[in-house]
Length: 238
Image (tube, rainbow, N blue to C red):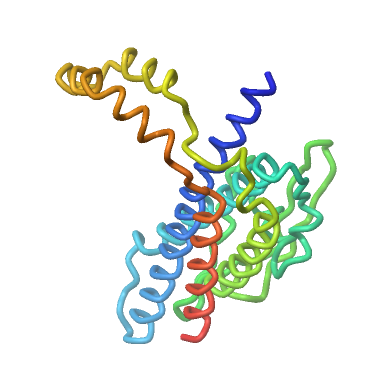
């Protein structure tokens, strides 16, 4: 069980960078759609519904990615990352409650448009998991500003937390061993037979190559966090 737990931790560490890319993807989609809306509105042109959907649907996906990163950070570092800590960030409390509203209630959250900018129109009232009434105040900032400011703070927080696990031996290397690779290839229903034959013929060389890999997934995550932070800073200057 302990060995599996360590492998699972390494798996999550290796997946983490992809989730940062996903966060960046959704954030960029929101910013691009917001900028497009402002340009069209300023020119007196119609803003197509597809543009607004990119913001509304993008925010829902963006908010859920935050939850994934929160949970994954705990798995990788072994440290709790409570929402109470995230709530100290700019718009942190709103992001927590807005994620619950969009995930559990299907609430669109972003449904106001004024002069080319997207907003949360009014306070959101919902029931919590203990049937308590929760009121979510509507931010005064438009959704573009809100997402950029929160992402900048959140990525800086993740960087600080994850930096303490950089170069930790159990996390380094590939997230699977040769036996797992053998099993995956043997059981694959989509891999062509000639590829399986090539793998079998070169198995020893592949095994030796895997033994030499010293990839540090946390270092890669930190690099991607820095990319998002720089993007947020750049976009806030525009």
